Length: 473
Ligand SMILES: [Cu+2]
Image (cartoon, rainbow, N blue to C red; front, side):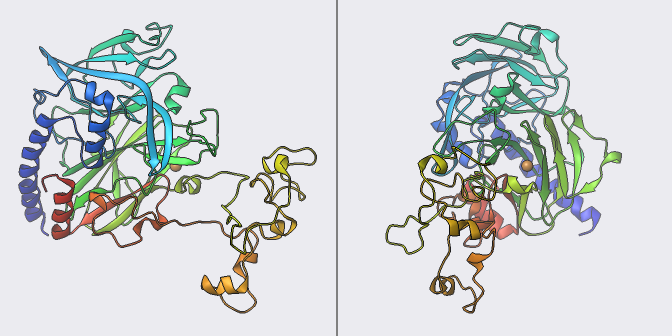
C-alpha cells in the first residue's frame, strides 16, 4: 500500500475509532471482553461511583487492559475523584486454580486508572486490609506530601482508615500505582495509571493495550502467595496465567501499542513473534522518535514500564511472552516432579520407595540432592523407589510406548534420564472466550505462564471476533 493510501486508510479508521473511543469513555467503567464480567462481579468496583463525562482534555483512545476493570470516577467540580479500596481478593490464575491475594476494588492487579495530562485528581484510598498500608504513585512528579511514604510524607493508613491524595498531573505516559510495602506489592497491590498526553501522539495507534507482569510463589495445597520466596511457579499477565490470558486483537493493518509494566522480583524479556516493534515509551513517558530502535524482545525490568508499537501487517496468531524459560510454565514445584499416575487400576504407578517423612522432604540423613536421595526426595509420599532414580519418571511398558507413538524396538523414551522436561496440557475448553474464537483446536497446548497471543486478523475474522467480544469493530 502506498504511503498516501495508507495514511488515508488510517485516518479513515481512526475517525471511526475516535468516535467509538469517546463513546467508550463516556460509558467508562467496564473494560473489554472478560473484564466486563469481572467488573460486575467485583464488589469493590461496584461500590465505586459511576463514571461521568469524558475528560475536558478531549477524547483519547482508551487503553484496553484485558481481565482488569477500568476504575470509574466522579467529577467534583473540575476534580476527577477515584476511590480505591485495598482489600483481600480471591481470584483464579487459570480456571480452577484459586489464589487468595491482595488487590484493589476486587481486582488483582488493581483496576486501571486513566486520566488526561493536566487533570486534577483526588484519589481516596480506603484500607480494608488487616494491616496498615499506603499508596505510592510511581514516578509521579507531585508534592512530597502525596508520595505515599509512611513516616516521611504521611502516617500509615491503619486498617479501616483512609487517606486522600490529591494532585495535578502534568506528565504523560504509562505509569502505575502500588503499595509501598514491598510484601504487599508482591501480594498483588499495584495497578496501571495511564496519563494520556494533551496532544495526541504521532503516529496514532488503532489499538492500545496494557499488561501488568507479575510472579507468584504458591506452594502445593495453598492459595496464598509466599511473598518471601525467590522461586516463582505462577507467572501472570493482568492476573492470569496462559492459557487463561485474553488474546490481544488487532485488525490487519492496525498500528498497535502495548504497554508493559513489571513490579516483581524478576526481569521479564517480553518477546513478540512475527512482528518487529519499536520501544516508544518508558516508565517516564514518551521516547523521542529519533531514539526508537527496532526489536522483537524488550526487557521490562523491575519497577519499569515499556511501551512498544508496531504495524500489525503480518496476519496470524502471534505469541507474546516472557522468554525466561521458567516464566513460560505453570505450577512448577521443584523437588516434586511430574504428577504420577495413581496406581488405582493402572499398571504404571510408582512403587513405594520412601516413608512419609522423606516423601515430604524431611531429611534425617544425607543431603537433599545427593545420589541417594536427590531424584526422589519430596516427590510425594510413597514415591521414590530405586528404579525411579534411574529414570526420574514413571516407566512405561512397551505396549504403552506403542500407544504413545514411540518406536516399538528397544528405545524406550521413558527410560531417558530427565524425561519428560516439558508437559503440555490442552485446556482449550476451559479457556474459550470471545477473543479465542477461530483459533486452531488445541491452541492452548503450548501456552503457559507469562504469555498471551496477539491476533492479527484479516477483516472478516476480525469482525466476527469483535462481534463476539461486543466491541465496535
Ligand atoms: Cu519473565
